[in-house]
Image (cartoon, rainbow, N blue to C red; front, side, top):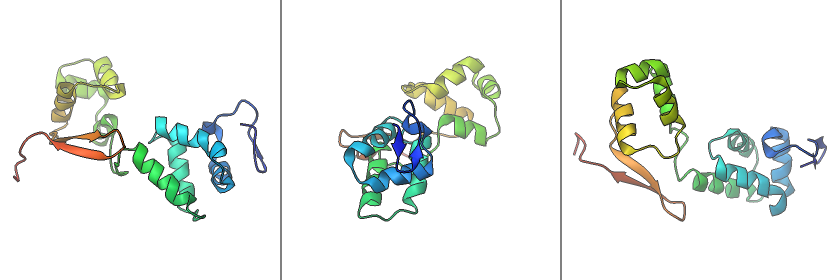
Length: 161
């Protein structure tokens, strides 16, 4: 990536280096080859900084379907999850606990908590123990189908039915 309209990012820049003005220039450009780095990055990091910048730009961009197309791509890459989803680390942090403190509650080391929070494939048992230590309980699992549709699988009957 070198130049986006009047903005010059240099030959070695990646899409992560592009600010909101550059993202807007790219989205306004209207060509798939120019959009590809953004689309690929969002696919790999649907909740990352680039996705957040795209959302910021989309709030102010209403150009000929571009905004709708990118919003649909964000939804698909996020598996239909809304922005009120949280990572394990955010749940822990919201309760004012450090990794070390949560580890003590669970009877495991801080390193094990760090590994669990960073894991892309944690076991259901580990996630359940983690959530229970935060006084939370899992009631379902969000699964994403091959075509990007979100499906919530209920684990067991909840207290309300």
